[in-house]
Image (tube, rainbow, N blue to C red):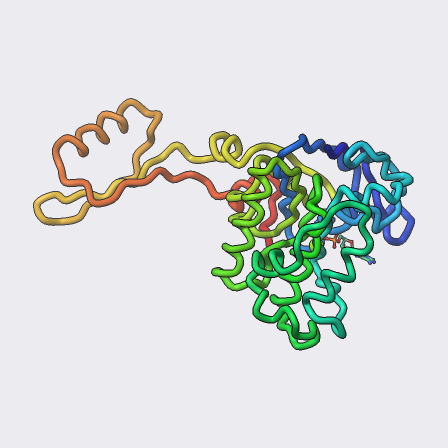
Amino acid sequence: MIKVENLFYSYTKDDNYAVKDVSFQVEKGEVFGFLGPSGAGKSTTQGILTGLLPMQKGSATVAGYDMKKPPREMFNRIGVSFEQSNVYNKLTALENLEFYKKLFDVPTLDSMDLLRLAGIDHVANKRASTFSKGMKHRLTFVRSMLNNPEVWFLDEPTTGLDPAIASQIKDVIKDKHKEGKTIFLTTHNMFIADELCDRVGFIIDGVLKLVDSPRNLKLQYGEKFVDVEYKLNGETRKETLSIIKEEDKHKLNHIINNYEIELMHTKEATLEEIFIKVTGRGLV
Ligand SMILES: Nc1ncnc2c1ncn2[C@@H]1O[C@H](COP(=O)(O)OP(=O)(O)O)[C@@H](O)[C@H]1O
Ligand SMILES: [Mg+2]
């Protein structure tokens, strides 16, 4: 659904690149995440793939359309939620959606249903100027769903939202995934990437370092250890044991068979730890 080959972008039109030789593909029905810290080139990539920024060097197709010259009809098939909400302050939430609907030549979803999905239906008739940043962000988010897009671009969809609202937004994304939509999501939040994405790409300084599923990454980079806490003569003992070394495996078996286990968990690496291993930098 999305194919990117050797993409470069420079805001200064020189060899100072915000996006540098980036190539990847997103299959139909896949949630693909761009994970990287602020300034990595995520929003720039989304900008090029949604026709907001011109294609300078390299190539990209989105839903079969060549992004060198995206035709108007493409915008009927994609949805774009921006990092910075850009709603009309003078219009109410409902009017914002109704106004936007007119831009599409395809059937659109019900505006009130969408406001409900984002938990802002109670302010449907209030002007956006009275909204908090988070509420505007949610309005931008559901506005991107109006045309029920086949390819959905989400730039930092949950950033700045409180946990309950973020979880609601994540559920909406999961539902769209189940419906078979293709989703390109950018985030600097490893939990979002881990929870929502089929595959993630690590991006730093405009360079895409690797692409894989969160599970594969954890298997490849995770430490093969288990932490176990157990009771011995009324005292809690703690051990960290390898789950590969024979000696440790025997020890673990012995503990399980003879003592009362209080706590046991594998020490799998988080995406952030893996990110640091791969890129040498953190996510903030
Ligand atoms: N409009 C702009 N003009 C000039 N430089 C920009 C502009 N937008 C972003 N940049 C620069 O491009 C790089 C990538 O930015 P961006 O794509 O916004 O990163 P991310 O979304 O990963 O935080 C950064 O160095 C940023 O400062
Ligand atoms: Mg960004």
